[in-house]
Length: 261
Ligand SMILES: C[S@@+](CC[C@H](N)C(=O)[O-])C[C@H]1O[C@@H](n2cnc3c(N)ncnc32)[C@H](O)[C@@H]1O
Image 1 (cartoon, protein in one colour):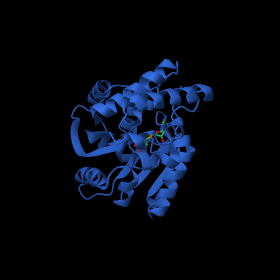
Image 2 (image 1 turned 120 degrees about the vertical axis):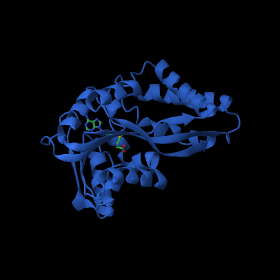
Image 3 (image 1 turned 90 degrees about the horizontal axis):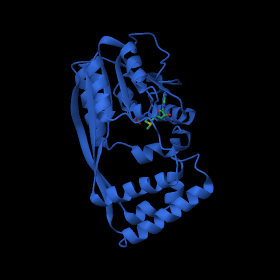
Image 4 (image 1 turned 90 degrees about the vertical axis):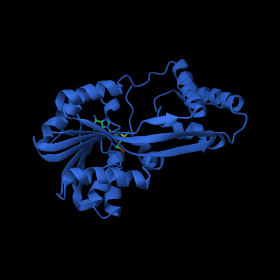
């Protein structure tokens, strides 16, 4: 199965938005590479523009491709609202077959994309092709360190999903695979932690409306299987977390893998 973001477009920024301090750290990282120049940036899998639009606000020219028309609509609408539509060209396209000539960009950025694309190494080949020599490629990741309570909360969900027989995404390159593929293409790659922040919600908040909120991630699970799964999970959560004010918390570390092209 593949995960489509069409149904998630309107919720994506609420759920995955970066804190202001993380956006500032991201901009400082790009500023250092730009050294005062206006960069031409490509983000394959641009989504709602969460990562790329701040670069347009900073004055860079941004191109993005995505296979989800609803995500692109949100991105274009946000670019309008933010007054940067003239610096942003977000179009339909496949990250594994970018519709640009070689050496068209100064900076290629990817975030939360490689695990979605079956031929993910081709995405890196494409970035290597369209970014000019002397430019940069950045892979942004957001690893999380979860509290024991959150680990139990999420691992039990994954286990119950697996027990329904539902096929999870098959393509999940690990960090080591990605690091090796970067090193092979861009030998002087460096990893930098840009920012980190705490997140969390109570068990009561996590339970609220759970079935409806999480459903978009499993669009092709049969409704009766979904209903039984959610009932079972919520019943388990009542016994595992009798105190619904228990915090499910963690820390995100925004991390950049930066490679000179
Ligand atoms: C998790 S979202 C991340 C969006 C954005 N990069 C960010 O970090 O906010 C993944 C995005 O990649 C898009 N996507 C998935 N496969 C793709 C492909 N082969 N080519 C282009 N975009 C793709 C999805 O439609 C979705 O908008």
